[in-house]
Image 1: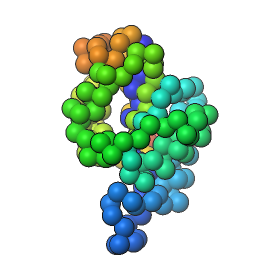
Image 2 (image 1 turned 30 degrees about the horizontal axis):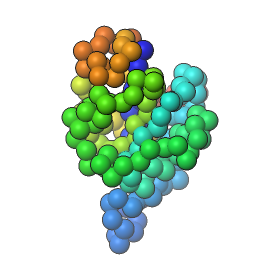
Image 3 (image 1 turned 90 degrees about the vertical axis):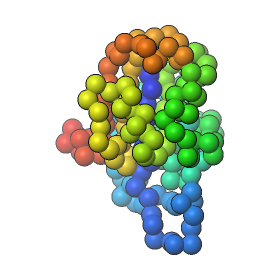
Image 4 (image 1 turned 180 degrees about the vertical axis):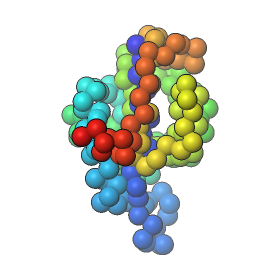
Length: 167
């Protein structure tokens, strides 16, 4: 089974107009909401084999929070500038090339790409994946290059709002 976990970065700051979009940091409320989501991922016993992140500060900070919460080595997070502006098809192509030794992959990135990517697999499409939102999709496949045609084992949508109600 292959598990793809899509994480939209936490809420970020627009306070400094001199910062580029790429360099915007997280707000405290974003960190707090991400901790709610991490708690749900811990309850689901998520153990990532690899965490991939956009190089944008807000995405990488979110990935680091998740890594720490799931006991994944922060220094092993793979980052790329390409994930910052990638289309959903570019990300899908990335998964086709993913080594099959990785069973659980977490990708931290941005909207609208993550919402569009999630909707390629979800039975009930999302209007919008909120900040700190997570989509967890489990495929009945042993190969990443087969996920587009694989049957779904399960799917979960985790948001700070629905995590708060489950505490």
